[in-house]
Each structure stands twice: as structure tokens, then as C-alpha cells.
Image 1 (spheres, helix red, strand yellow):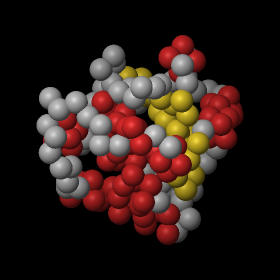
Image 2 (cartoon, one colour; image 1 turned 30 degrees about the vertical axis):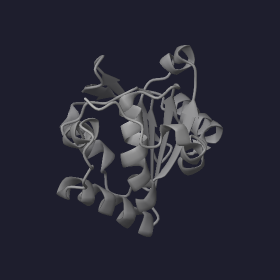
Image 3 (cartoon, one colour; image 1 turned 90 degrees about the horizontal axis):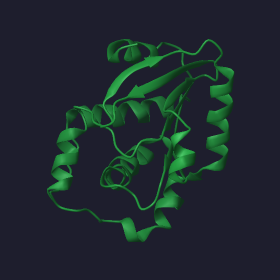
Image 4 (cartoon, helix red, strand yellow; image 1 turned 120 degrees about the vertical axis):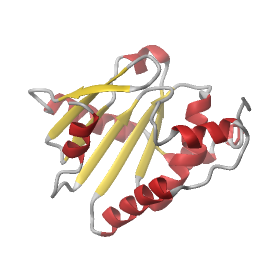
Length: 178
């Protein structure tokens, strides 16, 4: 699947549970890059129209019972991009209604897990990124059940983002200004 096909796959009508597993130290996306650049420059990160549309979508979905879950498997110390995600994106997405959890793991353990999406515990899309974190493609496994099981195991073993982040004040406001 290319990015457009993945978008259509993710936003199928009738989906009630959307579960995202992330494992990378950083992602390159045209929508996030301006925010990340401002953050790296030490400037305030402002929510633009596209980001507000996304936050509104999260809130509206939550209001009608659609569950959005995310687990990010990270290593510590956090990368600059992970600091940006936690301090800017995850705080806002959580407030909008996305249920986010974080699991810390050693690099070798994390490397054995790919990024993937699970819809309604039935459909899976496994993500492929280049070394910089740019989306390349996605594929759907013939048997989604091992991926569904892995998603639930990671969810169960991960800590809710708000408590995980609160327990790590050393990261709050930390950034290397470029």
C-alpha cells in the first residue's frame, strides 16, 4: 500500500477500534515537519489548521465511541524527535481523547518489533519506513492474529502516557536547539 491507499484503509467506515504500534526514534512526515522544525529552533509550537483538524477528529471519534490507541516502544534516553512527540504531540492527542501508552525497551528488543496498525482486532497493516523514518509502504499479513496478539501484549505491558511522562520530568522542556 502506498500512503493514499493506507489512508483509505485506515479511515474505512464503521471502524470502532484503531490501534497503532510505533517503534522508531523519529518519523519524517510533511505534516509534522514544520512543527518539529519550530520546536528544534526553540520556538513555540502552534497548532495549525491541519493539526487542529486531526485533534478534532480524535475528539469526535471518542465522543461516538471510536477508540484510538497507540503504544510507542522507546529507548531511553529519548531522541530529540521522541521528546518532541511526547512534549507536543502526545500531550495534545491525549487531551483530545487518544489513549496513548509508552513502553521502554532496550534497542535489541525494540528492533524485533515493526510498526503496524490494527483495526477492530481483525485487520492489520504492517508499516515499512526508510532509515530516516519516512513511510515507504505498508502490507497486510495473510494471518493478522499474531499481530493482533502482539498489539494487545504491548498495550497491556505499556504504561499510560500521562503517568509515564509525569514520572520523567527530566525530559520536560528538554531540547537541543538547532
